[in-house]
Length: 373
Picture (spheres, rainbow, N blue to C red):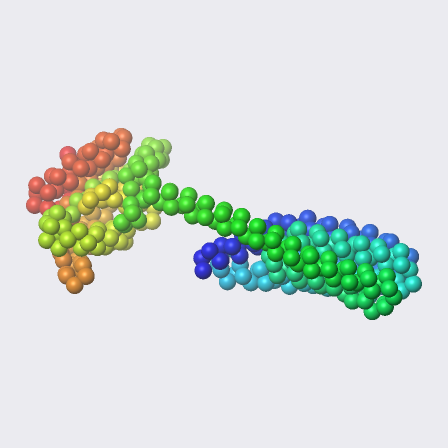
């Protein structure tokens, strides 16, 4: 379902990318056709047809530009826009198909041939522009060319009849060709989609923890370096909280690693609930987590109070019972805190000192918070 939605979004994107060029070409050809046929067709008919076609092309062009500038990702909206585009293509095909009756002089074979030449070229161009969407390509080709083929068939003389049959064969060939073009274009879209998915998976493995989906050590260090630089420029303080779950090894040894994994996932969710979206929660490995708090007060004492409040909130949250399958389990954290600048000016220093503070919390009886001293 996700892949289908991605394909439809890519189809719409490519259709809109060529929309302005296609409609501009259509308008220019319509002007040429109207000029040539104005000598053999009533002028009001020619001007009326040309005016309607130009107005409709301009409206389609403006709608296409708007949709390009305001893209959507919602599956339902993408599908709706694709349907609207197809309706526009169908109406354009009908307007071009109408030339078979409005601009087709009864007793002038030379001008009749010019109309046929133009319509044949329009269908070929339509195939190139709309092949990424079979529905649009079929609608445009059939509605543009079929009326003139029927008109030739109804004229009834040998040449007109033969041209009609040849035209139908051409239309069948066109339909078969557009299928192959469409298949090739969709395969290219799928290959592009698969490449993006692979890139996303590689990035996920490189920067995020597989179990908890939290940033891993590499991404944490990158964000920490950025936060330190920002803190130095703005004067806003920050802090690094190093968390270790008390007696986690005992849980793995008694209930198994699957229960330990369940606990780690729930801890990650609770930690995310204790901080702001601008803060970072990371898992270094095992039962070790790091919380990075940014944009704290410029005043050192006030910043310490802010960090202590978050730390106590984390302890209260992680102290709540966990449901590990059929087991209810109580877990507590030990938290060490290192403040930006005071306790280190590089990520190495901050991580080391926050780790030291965490062990001070364990020595103090666990389930506690200690600032690095």
